[in-house]
Length: 303
Image (tube, rainbow, N blue to C red; front, side, top):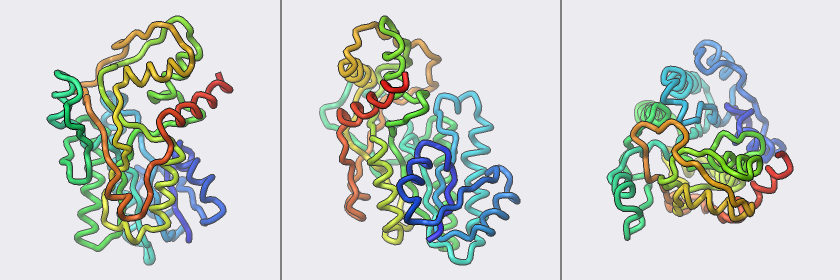
């Protein structure tokens, strides 16, 4: 089968291409997603069986100051790709990379902010209402709704995956896991981080790629579904930083709240993987501790 992949040079796109390059014929989208005519011409010429749409601006904090750019790339770009894909004669499925950020504000978030973790652990699933609270997430919810519209109205096949925070990068230390590791490796006395109180769940990159491979191989079972991915084990960012520091033997000082606050900060994001596991058998396997060990070793060699 031929796969048209967007975001080929990104974190997951690179890993997915490496994993599946010998099993599928890949066409890597080169067109600017914002240029509908260009995208349509390339998509029709490639004529893929599957489209995997990973390309997006994903730096949540930046979306508050580059709202138009995020909306144009993440929403308009996706609509351009969907509308082009609808003209393909033999498209089997359109796989879309969404985000757990679509859940945004939930009542539990304020409860966690004011009182800490509740006695009853709560993880979001596919039935949890979406309340996006940043331009990045608003665009992703818009894409999900557009996919539901074309699926219902034109029988357009799609799968959307609300990915959780994925770590294990080898060349980008913007995101929280790699940022904490590299700061601690470079500075023995003190580092500077943002909010420490929010809770997040994390998935190691090999688990995320295993999930994408399972969805690709069993895409017919997944058509019309929007999945959460888990793992349903949230950790406070302050505790996460301490966990990393302990692994590194780092004893310096963390200066919290040293970055611009995120408007309407979300204090709780955690999801489960029950539905996707029940349908295709995939589930996360790499523990947070083991995944951090692998990521730390990678960055020790680079820093």
